[in-house]
Length: 315
Length: 295
Image (cartoon, rainbow over all chains, first blue to last red; front, side, top):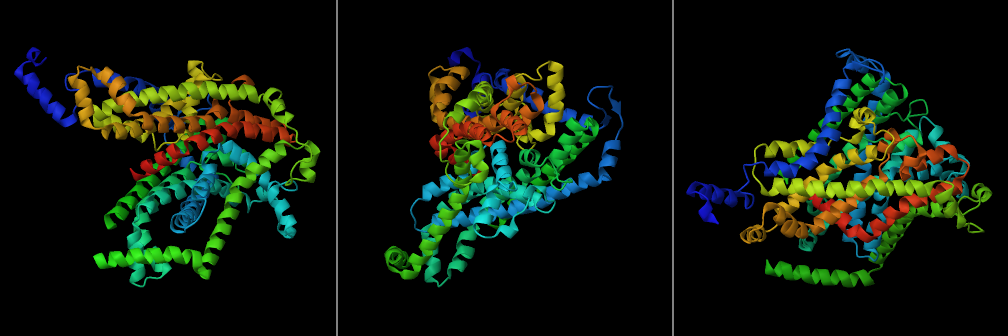
């Protein structure tokens, strides 16, 4: 086969195959692009193009039907002075703060229990605690909406049955309780993922480290802090990143359970975008909100990835 | 060193013995067992409530929300399937999930194969552009997608659900498969090339069979995400005849608030397939997450 090529081809070929093994003959030709074509055609048309368009829309005054009008940065100026935008933004930030702590702590606690304690039913518990993660958000929303509903709801029924009836509440109708209530439903689905990631990390810790620490007279708490913590630092950054992004993009639960109400007490950015674009038909302004949300997500990802880089350097 | 290791080993043996003997250890164990059992009940309790409510007659729900039904109305599932249109929603979900999963598997495999084994101009940039898709959620692009589908005349059809979901699932697929193909032993592919395999034959005969575990993980994840997708049908679909399960369920919730049992039967029809997939492929799901988290 080699006779058909000049010496130069063979040499080039050998070099290419040393670096990447395969694909030398057509390596510089069209072939790789043919393999990428199907993926990039769909990705380009239904992801990249809309991503470009959302930025374009954010500079328009447009109701979605009549003629588009270029208004420059007007939508962004309006956004900067819109109390509803800042309220939604604040709710997202509070959600993110709680979202990177609560599921992380519960997940880590459960992982430590399940890996470190001698017990039966470990696989059962792992399977059960992860279960909410695979449910459709609409199922989670319906179930929790109903748990919280006044009169017939499960939460109030339980409170009544154990004699705490005076703590009953119209949870989702209250401007104080609605946001925490939806957050609880979200956290119910989120901690299983954290737990699974921590379990994988903890299982790789060698038992000898604990024994050595114990011989050196370390208390249980000291063992956790000095032996276990260094091993969970890296997975911890992954968990925090995932939950932070999840908190910023939360939509389904809020939309179905309260649609931002009562009195905007649960308004978050993605819901505000939806209301502007599809209910008020202010596509330009809604798009500016979407771009702001995208920037927040990218900044948060970069921040937490950098944190992860720092954690790795210290490890 | 050896001494401390040996001491550690004997310590461990002592600890296992202590676990069965010491009163204090036994009490902590009892407490953790109890705590975990209670916590796992808070996860399972909503499922119990959904099932039990579906099977109750209407007026018994408000009288006795937590207990078992006195008469078990199994017919409620048939009623939800026919009158509640959940049969039609179910089939639409299947018609969306199957092409999305197949296209994502094929498209990611081909692209990942090129990224992992070939050398070409713009490889790094193209890969970065693709992976950037992992950080931008659907919420951001759904507005232009709506107007795009309007112009294509695909609004209110299943295509408006299929095409974008292929696009948003490709980045994860390419990332997962590229890592997997990159870890395959080079010798196997070189051997295939020696035997005169072209690139395409190499892909189908050598790489594809070796990728089976990664493809299975990708299949399970794409299935779950597509089956559960809520936002896209919310925006794209108007007619009852093209609704998928999650969106059908949400409209049902708006219309028949009073018919709680029927709605809970619909909830059951929506989550049951995912439960079955989860029970069968739990290992793949958890492995996929932990390898993804390590990267």
